[in-house]
Amino acid sequence: MDATVYVVLDRGAARGRDLTTLLSAVIAGGCRMVQLREKEWPSGRLLPVARRLRDQCRTAGITFIVNDRVDLAVAVEADGVHLGQDDLPAPVARALLRPGMVVGVSTHSLEQALVAQADGADYRAVGAMYPTGTKPDFQLVGPALVREVRPAIRVPLIGIGGITPANAGAVIRAGADGVAVISAVCAAPDPEAATRDFVAAIMAARS
Ligand code: TZP
Ligand code: MG
Image 1 (cartoon, rainbow, N blue to C red):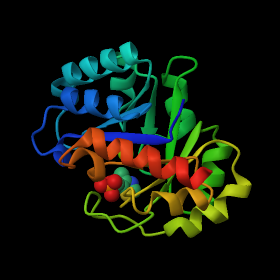
Image 2 (cartoon, helix red, strand yellow):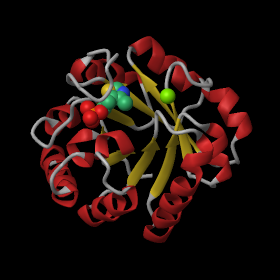
Image 3 (tube, rainbow, N blue to C red):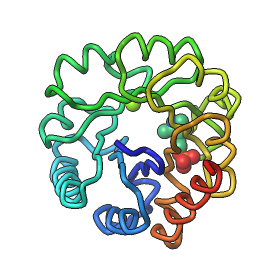
């Protein structure tokens, strides 16, 4: 799992663009981990999309995660599932998943990050780093929370929320292992170039 630039494919944010085309672009740009996030379509409608994306990721050798839906993640043999604070708790999801599947958890405080660690989550998303129009009920915690959580957390920490190539470096310098991005890639005029810009910004911040 390489979450350096973790692109969250969201049909709403992609504004009608085909997700398979988008996925090809972000893979070409250097993304090694993606998530399928769909807040409106029922799982039956999403299933063929998830299967196509899963196949593409497998061919490219990158990690494919499904947001929210444990059943869909299992059905399409995704690499894992991403859970928010209102989704199934990590241990409950883990019991339903195949052995070895990744469980990621969104956290908005040190306390939630410690609970996720005790629950055995494989990576932690921390957000929102910056104001975002993608998630109307975002909690703004900023890179300060990454700095606070970092010493207490052993698994990968991934910043999320309002991240662009211009501010990604600050999230990495605060201690994040990677950034998860939706609109800055899915709504970009050139998603491949946007992904490349993220990779370059993060490499520069790490060096
Ligand atoms: N969780 C915290 S902020 C956020 C999520 C899903 C939205 C991130 O979207 P964007 O467009 O990268 O700000
Ligand atoms: Mg969720």
